[in-house]
Image (cartoon, rainbow, N blue to C red):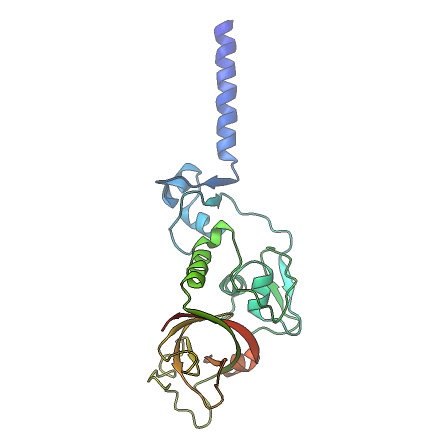
Length: 254
């Protein structure tokens, strides 16, 4: 009888242990773990893990927490208001512009009032069109790589200041499309380039512009004087939508 009771208790304990493992909601990465090993352990695929955790590569880090299932989001959409930009909506929701573009199958950052965006329910999305905070404020494990890059950029900055930013294209009347440093923007429309006052930012410097990204100070302009910059945007309508705004500029190298 005692053997039977002990055997029964052991069976119950084993079942409970297995149930706990199977229904775990998240997993904290340990040294030596791989996405493939975690996927095998919890009977999911590497692709699912990457999708549930917004991972763009197979790189994971000790102490990082992975979701082991698709989370149900409470608020899933946001209606665009006048003055909103994709960047301001991403910032307010604690996510990234790229994440919103992927979620909504957007090929550009152009959005229009009244448009409804899928947001995955993260954050309050109380968007403000001219926020002064950095675009990447997300601290969740799924964006650990982006957060690390942002921190690195901030700490490595040679000089940081606030500038008035406008946008320009390579396809305007009288434009050659070639910058002051010889970059052919028509042949390289995805190149991140800004026009600067060389007395403020030396030509050839690597810079990070809030809401635009990391770019090369590769051009000049007649109206670009002092703390003024012009960011290159290949699409004319997007350049017009960029308007005029105050941004934080970090000079990363010169």
